[in-house]
Image 1 (cartoon, helix red, strand yellow):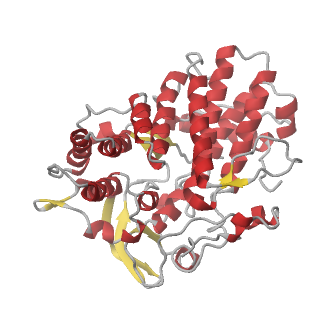
Image 2: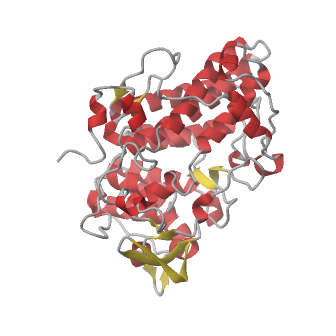
Image 3: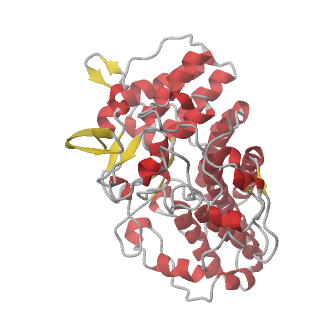
Length: 460
């Protein structure tokens, strides 16, 4: 099968090298034969190690130089990568088409599906281990299904109308699950999140395995459920189920009493460290620069620009250049190679609720949420209402752009709110409305697959 699963032996060996002080992951080196043993002869230690492996698999290339945030930042005109040794940061991501066989256009498929297959194996294995209590089994199922849903969400938002695979839970020697459309992808993500929420509701007070420090405050089944509902709210907004989003947000960790930037930062993140065997945050890459429009479009409060612009960038004396463009603006969002990368934060939840409230008729509540973020995080004057739908979307996109800068959102937001063509066009040959193609390796395993013919540019 073209979707490959990493061995548990490899995961366990990696996990054993991660220091507890960095990510709070303390998993023994199992030295077991591999994934078949987990599936056929699971033990308490192998299942809990695999759960920790799911965390590492879920983090994968989020903060890599050619990873999720960097690539989506380039597509969303948040960033440039002026790596002179690799012209594909311009030639492929911004010009021409995304190539199925390259590490650029072929991205965000194999790694999430490998983690999904590991989650499937864990879910089948847990019932075979008599040592687990019923509550522990529910905790493992709720956790693994939530991770699986976030992995599938990465495939869905990057591949969009090209679709993806949702039938993954079968033996590798069976026929490949079909490539289904965007709507089916999101329906499966919703189902997984709701099923996992039900399981978490039956779990005990603790997980039978450690979570990373990025889940601090969300590392019990009850608090992890709030994280699950936060992701569920994001997905509901993505599919325009705004009533469902409001319901999910009520069960999430949204806090509208905060009046500080720190209160808006509360949430779940991926953790990094310089410990042996662990991963570092590569978004401090010296070739990465902020898009100049982030400075030009920042709104002012008198003589002072949006505090989010000031807080998240700095001007450098030596500009970066390449592909016929340049910038002297650098992000400070990630201050070091051990800086955490947000998965979802209170600030986003407030903006999700603003969007859901507006569309469901609560315009006053929507404006209150928008202005809470705008005044506290941006230091800007509040917006006066009422706002037309067009004006509200413009205001919402501005707040999301500056509140969630370089976290992987702007390209997705512009596309889902039909504003993709509003992204700045640096050169006439650049593309904006793209989606990731089905990778070449997957297509080679599916001769004649129609989805493989769709490519990265939507049909005229």
